[in-house]
Length: 188
Ligand SMILES: Nc1ncnc2c1ncn2[C@@H]1O[C@H](COP(=O)(O)OP(=O)(O)O)[C@@H](O)[C@H]1O
Ligand SMILES: Cc1cn([C@H]2C[C@H](O)[C@@H](COP(=O)(O)OP(=O)(O)O)O2)c(=O)[nH]c1=O
Image 1 (cartoon, protein in one colour):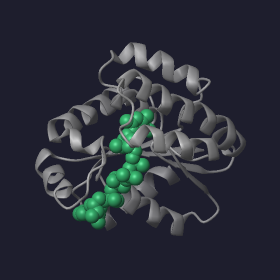
Image 2 (cartoon, helix red, strand yellow; image 1 turned 60 degrees about the vertical axis):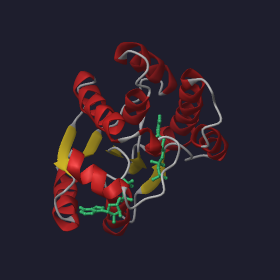
Image 3 (cartoon, helix red, strand yellow; image 1 turned 90 degrees about the vertical axis):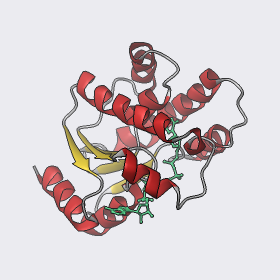
């Protein structure tokens, strides 16, 4: 089982992952970017905003993804592996390029390995605005509210285009309600 939790910044991914760690102690928990040793270096480069080129930034995330699939996902997917972000973020955040082009590049990075379960936490514009006001933003988050809502729309489209087994959850529900929905989805 290769489970991914997706959503734009502040959707509640970390909160739900903390709960999942208690509920599924046998699972391997990982993340993109930065789930491997090389990935930590690529993450730092991608997130500090140093790259002038959006394409260069995307290739840093793609390199991280390729290594993550090889080192973490392939060896663990017969058990339960849960990742904070995935190819869905990869395709969606590279919003300067058409979806089809970025999808092809991402499928090369993942060797065509795709999540078996996608949990997408979906925020309204109002709730996003509220949550971002309480947070110090990194260079990606600081691009703004409309940018992030556009990314969220790309995420939903990506899940549908790739025909992935998924659940879209209203991220403004209570933490407990969300966590129950996630548990039910994983348990099938
Ligand atoms: N269901 C929820 N309802 C209200 N606030 C939430 C909920 N889930 C998370 N939060 C809050 O929203 C903020 C972002 O949550 P976090 O889990 O860090 O998101 P992410 O990992 O997706 O960036 C935190 O302040 C967190 O306490
Ligand atoms: C995986 C991935 C993330 N991102 C972005 C989304 C996030 O803004 C950032 C990763 O941050 P993340 O680890 O989710 O955030 P935090 O530690 O702040 O909670 O990188 C991309 O732009 N492309 C990608 O391929």
